[in-house]
Image 1 (cartoon, rainbow, N blue to C red):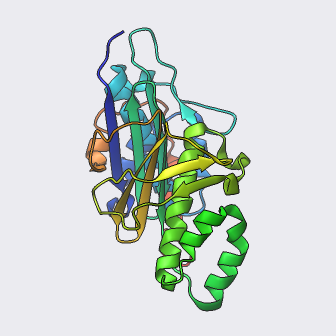
Image 2: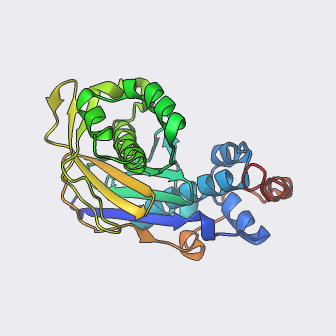
Length: 283
């Protein structure tokens, strides 16, 4: 089958979504039962919102690019939890991955035979003894070359934190692309950072990866700043040029534009969500 290669990068700002009861009914009836149950286990409202947005992003991508109806989409998971879709005879290969943290949920999707992993990470700044202890605990997860970058002598504490989370974001994107999760040794996955600064709303692609001492030339990593403190990284195999410059923001209305009811309305599920605190010690 002939098909056009496409790259899709979507972002949903969960911090600007204050769901009404009708919003949550639409969202919670538009996902699979196991997804609904997984979301229901989150203790805080923010985490449930972020996870819900991720599920809706996946289903929207598959609906738009498969040509199937929303209710006919079936999302599966590997033994390590990576979501995937089995395409039919007249549907192109659709590969995708999601990530959510802090204020955002994001999706990286590819129409074509491309393995894709995406991660988003918001910097948590530490200082003084807190930073020293954090680095002591975490340095074994980094290669010597990476650690030299993280702890560069002229870096401030803030810059150390930023580089740490940037590299961690890259590692997560690669692990999600290969679908193994944290079963791999993170120290053996080493990133060569060539550009210390990342632009907002513009991907850079210069970072290289070495695994167990071998440089993997057929991988590409597209990095971007979502805001001043949030990194996102997309891992792609085989190596791929940037076909899109930034993540496209979606509103809730756009997110559920193709949505159809899959499971019945559950009033108790909705009540439970609205009774949750947004974050610890907050309303």
